[in-house]
Image (tube, rainbow, N blue to C red; front, side):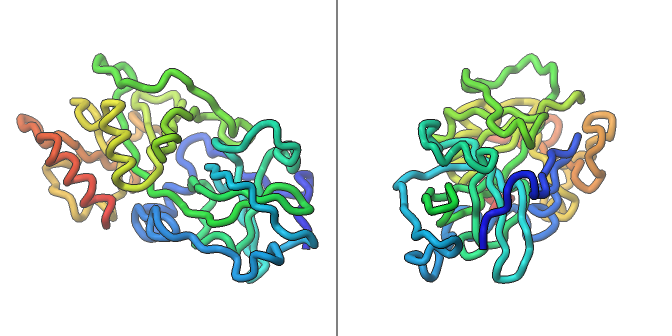
Length: 279
């Protein structure tokens, strides 16, 4: 069976506020992505046949990262599309096909969730670019006041390679070399939201590098379900005025540095996050 042409496809559009992946990650299995949130993934059982289309797969030896923007649930014939954000050379002729999106077959991805960040290996066949050995990354979300006097050390380069789908986001490709996707939401709200996608240890290293872990006003965004395992003294309800349009069950702030009048050290902060991500 063939890839659908872009004009025939359902297109994922970034909602004005909270993306659908917030719900799937928090309410359906916690913070872990497919393959245990950073390990595994699985390949075609018959890679020589390519899984779809008449031509065999030609592996390019390239790894890339993107966002799963569409998934068509059709049983064993399920498939989807990834909008790449890093790792695909512009000189590849196939990179211009299908609106720049990359095809993914059900045999190459486990537990697909639209909106999640996927790392994958590239191949070419008779229909264009495809993704295999797909792994969904774990995610951690931070928030801080828009006008905070304590600034983060963010990378200089700020881009949005997925503007067709994500009009309210920017990405920082420099961190991809460290295995982390850093995304900033450009919402008009009192709080700025950052997402870090990757393995647990890579996320923690990147968060420490840009100053999130030691920032006095930073909170981790969590859900009420996840918050049940956290010391209530470290939690607060974030108002709708601070994060307009985000459902109440996702507006829970987890104070990394401790309750008012206390201050956790770096090791304690990291331990709290490891425990949260390990749920």
